[in-house]
Image 1 (cartoon, rainbow, N blue to C red):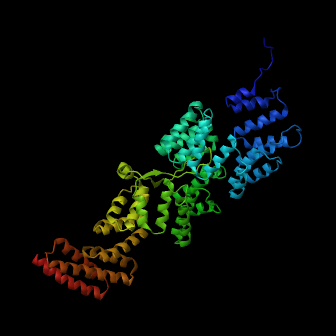
Image 2 (cartoon, helix red, strand yellow; image 1 turned 180 degrees about the horizontal axis):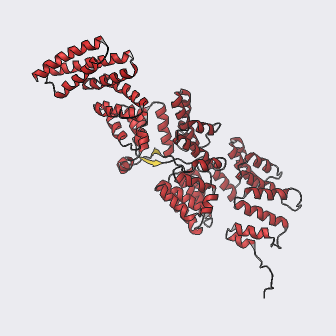
Length: 576
């Protein structure tokens, strides 16, 4: 029989077994834990706070225990403080805290190993790695380092071996799922993940990994459905990885609101914020964000390669383009990336910058699939909202209908073909580009216009002038004027038109000379052709147009040529 006014007893460990850290913390904070010493209670409060990602409170509790007020506090508290600093991104403070613990231990060596990796100090990584032993925790740490280095196959082998030995440890399947994800084996990733999800159906980590897989296998909508089904609003709002990926899956919506605050917490946030700046033409902002940032993983080399390419093109700087080529080549030649989709795509970019277009065509001519790059630290997966056309060796016809709608692939493949002189194939690829922002780009306009000219369709190239961009029109007129002049034949008419339009804009004498030369070229072409056939109405109309352009000029030489052409045209018009 309960005594009136008594308070029921709660065992905080019941909440821990259910992973209800909020409930456990509430019991611990209430003080109804008479069976615990004050030191043990504080240790559990710090632990629960840590699991709830309340890192600052966890740190404050550990510091209180370390203050000397609690004589029976364990000596390894400095290591716990180091772990909290690590998760706060304060790696130097984490290293200082770990080194303050004089006694060596496996935990101390593991912590210092991961801190050294985060600081990019490979000398210390090698030093602390040699202290690892055969324990499960040490094996997981070694695998995590390999995963950071992009050695996904080797890491997957470690996890598979551990799973075979410890089938009851479901968490290992999450790590294996991440490796498969990084190896582009999405079905295998989902299969490994299902083992963990059956045991923990409400896991946010599992939901995040599944969403990333669905993003690759299906689309952003499918990925969003996974997160929205498994994560409540509070989780979406408070979980940094989920918030990050929600922006990714929403194609960058709220990027400026979310990414800046995650730059020092989620490694991919810096890269994705830079990509957001790229997409919006804010190259200076991207340059400032990445200033002093070194390529520590394949994805960071890709982003730095894009940045240097964009700056190099804007500033016409060979130095920036050389740096960009180096970044792309480092990924393409990397032993861990050489045979991956990302590695081959980077090799194509490197070949483009080296102007080795025929080799680029060989790469791009293989079958491709769509993929966006992502950088994933151990035990957590994030996605990225930039799409690339990247290749895998498979039968071309099996995926060609899918590739036909991929703007990135058709853009790169078309330009590489054109630069290699394969203008008919290039034209076919470039015509598949559908995104208006790409079709209005100067590079696209000039290349597709040249393809039309080289496929003997100057009228189609002329139609490309239908634009409000004066700079694009001017560049295109120069292309048509010079290319049609070199091709000759009936394309002399379009050369004359272009030179005439350029002269109206600039009054540059060379443009007038071009008009004269193209007009004479067309006239000579028709005279020679007349010897074996009759002149057509289209030929007479072309001569009429040329005559009008010459007569409208202020040059005596042009008017003289116009009279000669007019006399010949009149004679043959009558004979027709």
